[in-house]
Length: 300
Image 1 (cartoon, rainbow, N blue to C red):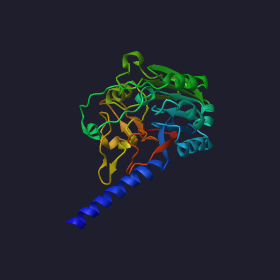
Image 2: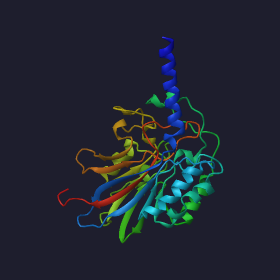
Image 3: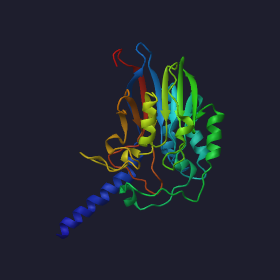
Image 4: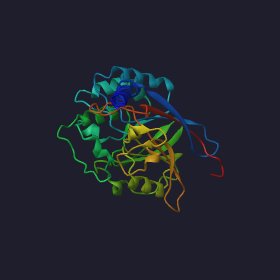
């Protein structure tokens, strides 16, 4: 019995060491095709960034992010939770350096507004957990103003549009739904039928948003927040999503459809970081995503 207990303990320690020391730094760029453009359209390259949770000391993550400009995206979509420290804004801007020259849109997440706090991990297994806001406010206004100053569109409870590689793309976005800051009534309305593409953006993929945007005709929905589950079990997947999205869609590309409406594509980023107070990932590498938007079949 002692030898079995020792083996189990060693396995647990080894797994935790791998999750904290290796996998949470194993940054990867996931590449996915999305058949969402009109038939005959040329492809568009969209870089999806989310949940970076940057602290000044994360120099490896900063170097990796700087290299993403080399993939030459046509558009950057940032779905929030960039910050994790009072001094992170200049660090984030330095890491995004070349990407800020690319057309971009963004929304903010709870960890752009508030510093992380230590939580009981068991809370994430509860579907009815109460959302509270920490006391320490992060410099989110500085981050927002820096992004908009470089030309990125702020989609906080608003619409916007950009010319991207010769195409007119229209957007809708909301403030962080996890904190209840979203104002769906303020952005309600049918997607623009004259746009080459309509994209809806939020930090957290709550079903109230996805349902409304599918009904309104948005064909690409983009979010983060879930960390892909952060801890995944082989053969089971994500343990939680930290919202009301089902576990099967905790990361990656999926379909979302309300009865009687054409399906939308939903892309959920597993994100590049974690709270600095829970720096572990298991079977869920930190990621950015390069979505190549391609023409859909004429009959789809």
